[in-house]
Image (tube, rainbow over all chains, first blue to last red; front, side):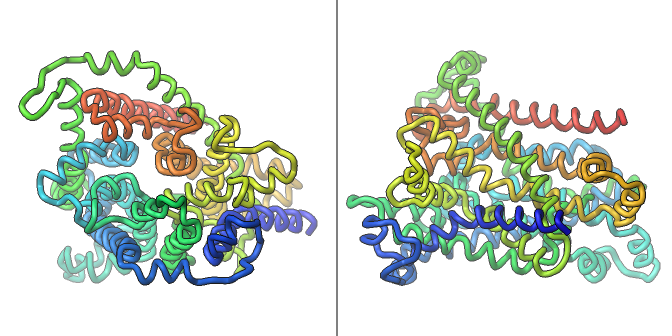
Length: 268
Length: 288
């Protein structure tokens, strides 16, 4: 009992420390700039929503969130569409070069995005995709597709092969079996793969910023605008930061029952 | 699972192959192409062989950046792996409190990296940040924009705050996969808490720890956005890591040949070290 109490105390202390920086950001987002720069207060004295109002009324601000959401969604869809059949193939079949291909895929997860900066910029400019959502979505596939194949392969290997064989005996064609029977069986795995694809695409900025200028600019790039001639607009910066945390919270809420299995990446 | 030999499976892999070839092979070939040429402008390129590589390897600024990078990644692994295991062991195992814990732990992972930098930029300031203000109140002379040691401590602390939850969540899911019977057997044997950890939990955590070490190494070795926002690489170049040096070279100075040679060396180092980790850990596995 004593042991459990100590554990409970430890984890509570850790989570409080973990939340402190976020509390501070939230606290600051409800303050005026005078209050932020004037004195240190633990709760807003003059509670204001003006910082949020600035973001929600100015299209050049809120379009950043829309742009980010668009390319993240496209990326998640592309990632799942190509990764699902590939993960099935890696899990069920032996074929020429399968191991090499798998490791080559994973090696792309190890590639520093900075390495691809210049060639990506030139590649997407030359095919006329510069400053489009699809360019960022495709660029993020570089690290999301290998990860999704890896996660899904783990989940698919957990499904006994007898299901596949039974479906064939029942006269299902492969596409019909895959969509009608197989995908519903591994839906938690798909949820987890989608979660990771969302996560890594949503948080990435280096590639997203380099491949866009105006029309598809992500929110992260717009946030640097708060540094104006009269110094940094701390209140709006904090509010913009808080708003970037919300989509992540929403997604984590959807997969909350699968997080534990999810972080095992399908292979324990 | 016994797999069936079937070369038609290539059709299922083909979309991934085309997509990744498009977004990895073509850019990589471009980099290789640049790394052996000196380019003055369109149509004015000269083949220079390994000249760029030799120059990059001898460049002191890059060597310093590489040294800092290894130091940073080593510090990250030494702090985050044990801390993550410890947190996973403390987490509640069932009920509402467990899922609340999981959600709260996942939050730092879902914050865009530039915002992580912004949060700590604010949090660490002596005038408007809780952390910097608190330290100054305690009489510690702390200023991360002026003092190299403070800048390093802040970047490290930020990374620990940001990524330890990933290690903890990986370990937590590994711990959940241990059957209850193992613990019951240990109880009958009157095994100590340490013995349970050393002989039951740690061996079972090995596969997730391999993933955690590899992911943490790779991502800390490629870190760019967070320190860039927090310190801008300073004071001086004390927190300038490899990705920032490369980005400045490629986009800022447009020094294409040198940047390309540097890119390839950088990529090869990540691949080599990851491979070393992976084989070392799986080799230990076989010896048992």
